[in-house]
Image 1: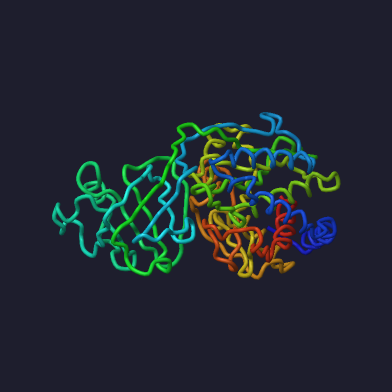
Image 2: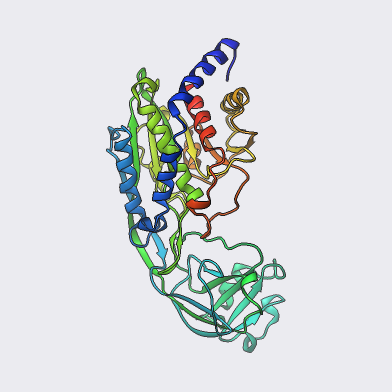
Length: 420
């Protein structure tokens, strides 16, 4: 917390000098985001080694920016986990019409391989009200506007093929398709259709979907280190996940510009800043690009269970995700858990008006800060508010990411981390 006018003056002086050093390095930010979202990295997922290729790129950038290997591990921390993927066939026809993957429909991330043509039964009442003959060999259709709370997952398990009659589920989503990653495979298929992409409710569905379950997908967290000039044995961590959703079939990529190429770009900018001799921090700093976040915060969980540095000596963790907008300011998760830290961040913002507002919320298991908080490490998760709504879809692309307040955020984070 800023306690006096003299402290504020010193911070202002630092920020003026720091702002000049930053130089509004927007071209580098755009370069990082454009590269990570390019087809070469396949959506930074688990098809065609997209995440592994992204990790190689990030390590090279750490080296290019003057970050050193972490003394206890080098630039990598390796681990593995299970993941379901869709590397090849992806065809869906409704009433004979071929639909576009990612635009007209998404397949549930835990779906198995499915091939065949099936009848579709539109459900408008509890499944227990249907006879066995009515359900036999069907896919059932759920309109999320009309069937909320009519069916539970247990209902599905009871009636799904091969145990009884139903082969799968077709959901109709009225607003937006949002994909994710699964670490398991379920027994039945599930397809979600965007309502605006279909003229009539389907009477039949033809599917050719091929999954590939990887039991042990090898990946790594990527680390870059800057030694502090005074308190070398205490650590500040800045983190951002680099993985995204990857590919859904042969032709569809989820680029993940805002989520989270933007966070990696900020990680690079902050690392580059503090690696300069004139900006060497008082505390040692570790910059971590986490893998496996979209699959369930796996990389950060692995780190906290296998720490490369005593967790008790981590002074603070700043986690960066979804930093590509900012018209409505920024949200800070854990702000209510660490009010003095939030007051410090908010005071800096009020002094320089970097963002229109910094909002606060409590604990949430919604990004890689979570496992550190659970392990007793003071942590913030920061993400921007307002602007484009692209999220976990094919429209989260580098070309349309506005980066509205990115430079201002960079200055804010530098000032906050320098005031530790």
